[in-house]
Amino acid sequence: MEMKIALLPGDGIGPEVIAQAVKVVKAVAENFGHEVSFEEAPVGAAAIDLEGDPYPDSTHDVCLRADAVLFGAIGDPKYDNDPKAKVRPEQGLLRMRQKLGLFANVRPTFTFPSLIHKSPLKLERVEGVDFVFFRELTGGIYFGEPRGRNEQGTKAFDTNVYSKEEIARLARMGFEAAQKRRKHLTCVDKANVLATSRLWRETVQEIAPEYPDVKVEYEFVDAVAMRLIQWPKAYDVLITENLFGDILTDEASVISGSMGLMPSASLGVENKLFEPIHGSYPQAAGKDIANPLATVLSAAMMFEYAFGLKAEAEAIAAVVNASLAAGVVTEDIADGGKAYKTSEVGDWLAANL
View 1 (tube, one colour):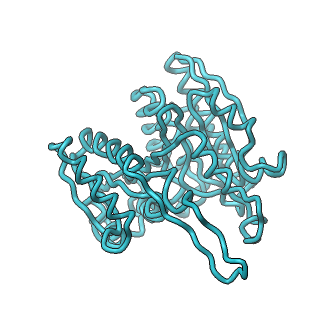
View 2 (cartoon, helix red, strand yellow):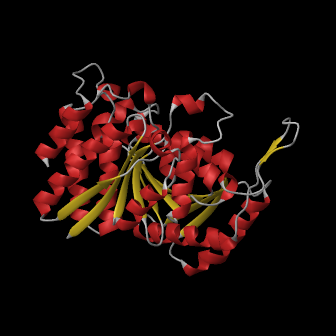
């Protein structure tokens, strides 16, 4: 198979972790007889520095030419510490999702046998955890209008907007995933307070009879935030809106023991993007110490979701588990043992596929 992959390294540790994923993708392509080509483009603060735009048209064109996009991270302290900045790296992330039509963010949470002791939760709570969030990505409060401040600058406002169509297309994706898993779907909302949440619940209730084999539950977002810590094994597939999903998936990501371990996919009708769920971690940028495994596992999701190549995805997952078992890990999970450099972990993974 021929594969054209757009590389958007972005900011902070993005270029370093993307470089390791490229090593692994090349090794997989060689082992399985695929032809792979890469085209790189700037995004985020890196793109602002180069072109004054966090998501330039030229970068968008690179994404459109590709079969899939591998994305690193966005964010830079010089913008984080300036709330009045009119051009911000995160604007590029939102515009990229919107222009590429990436309406569904798929974020799995699972554990690694050799790292369960690193989880902040007790063993009996975390062992066997395996659930996935489907977060709506192009609607809600991040995109709603109007937004801004009053003339005096003393009040600010954001508008949360959803249509039934936006909710239904994400819900159906969640139901279809549940049918292939444990046939259990949880709709996360705040229907006791928010009108948009009541529309979410109403829409999911209308769709549910189309999937009679899937058990559906409805939970308020605050209850889910608690139960993710108290009883994470209760969940299988969770669907939710943009803001709730943003917060809950970051909470869920640390269950495995490190935020540097969880991958994600952002899917649209025509375009597909894959990224680690951690941020740009600017404190580690350029030091060759960042954990690349979330990005490598995002490449595994790319093989499965973008190309339908499950064996290749499983090969990457297997070598990641092997690296963890062998202690070939970066300092965040070294646990007192030898800490390998980011590049050394990438080299080991590519060599041991």
